[in-house]
Length: 327
Image (cartoon, rainbow, N blue to C red; front, side, top):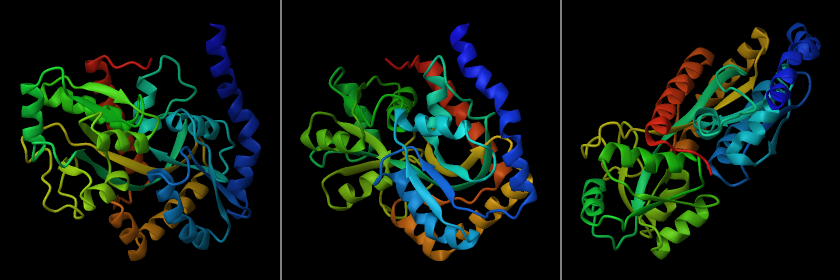
């Protein structure tokens, strides 16, 4: 009970403590000072890419600096936790993504925040399917043949991930579930070492984002077996979707979007959401995301919140069925 109070009491006190700055933001002209954009991952990754792609245009639209602060840790949970404790005044926002907002809450018995209750959803930015890859010298030409190989070689197949509880971890478990196979999970500290061991032959499969795998596939160092989106990736038009290969239920996408602490005043929420939508409508912004294997998906506050809720239901169901727990 003592531990629970440590989490709950600050949350109960937060509305009273943070009410004044929130009202000030609502009544004043927003924004009138720099805005901090938290990113829960190191520079150079897919989430950081999304933040830096929209940053210059968002600064111009809002008339204030948008300062990116990378705060990596616990797969994005650290940054989300920090955001949940900030004033809901629109001056601290977060580049949210799948892991800390739809997966992590169901892998830990105690979380410092509840993604569906403690945040104001501003707008979705983009989403992208994942690519299932193996080494070029593997006998399988597509994911269907790879699954057949796994079944013919029990106990020999494993898949890499960027870490326990990551979207890449869940992608492998989703394939296990849908295809009726039992590949062993081999977690790494990030996607880069996972790719290196796949190239080295220590693991047989990785299902990761296009921002990570497209360069490897384009160069011929890795072979794409399928994509997990609802449609083929324009960057890999010859690669079939998992659904085309008969794996219904294998569809999965990673999302990015802007969120703020719960209780964001409506005028501030409306301003941020409107300007974000204008930024995402710019052809050059859309082209940058497309080149990285992602697709701009401009959803407003209500639609974005509904999308995240559905994603929570998807991954929580898989985690329960597979009995996945963090060590």
